Image 1 (cartoon, one colour):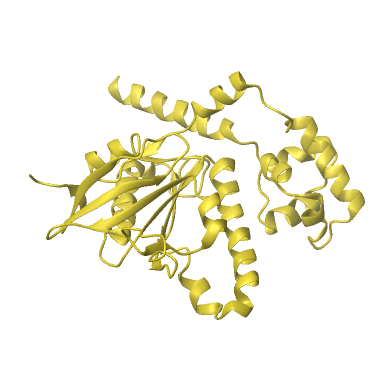
Image 2 (cartoon, helix red, strand yellow):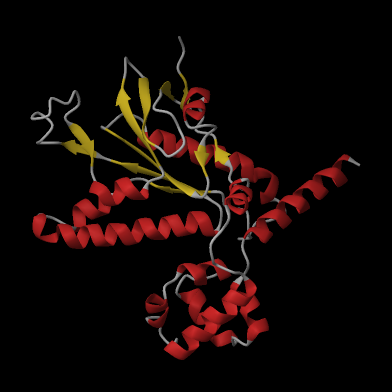
Length: 285
């Protein structure tokens, strides 16, 4: 009896995950051929919502998709799922599908309103040894524990299995591949495209995105008498793309301090956590 209840609960969760997004194969029911659907999938567009998120200009750059085909695909997607304005009530219902993933520290989870939020980008920045990578690893560990119930029955990629996407660190490759102010505009454009893709993935598949970032000295900080002359790199592009930004700094010994740097719905509070052999944990008094 208990096994039957567990199976029923798993089936209900799977149905909820599958209903969150609509597979692009549904376009076949509206006159789009399999070959064109395959081309869209090869370009990374796998859901109906993904079609709505892709601009007409971008879709026309896909090999084999002409302007006429693009319009037909857009029209078919609109029949399956409208992409117009949402009322406040409709958006409120959509927000109920958000979930949060634990960081491993109750105090840090409390600071974040329960953990790292899905359908959003959470950025953590700080100096070296402030726990950015440890938080990332602990989040992965927490996520793996949640997946254990699914591994036996679903050992292949299925809707709803993946809940978390981590980029550690988001600016590392950009700092290597782009150097000097002459390449700054190109770097920021590429960064904006990456962040836009991450945001779309988070909303399209209802996953939590956690990114880490580095810090640099701010030459203008001494002129404004700021207490901390360092700032996160990436400029306004990264600042505007991140939903919640967490500033990390060192404390005594293995203690670290996290502060809400910017967030649309979380107060500007602080939390203390510790780096342990097992990852991130609450600080011991």
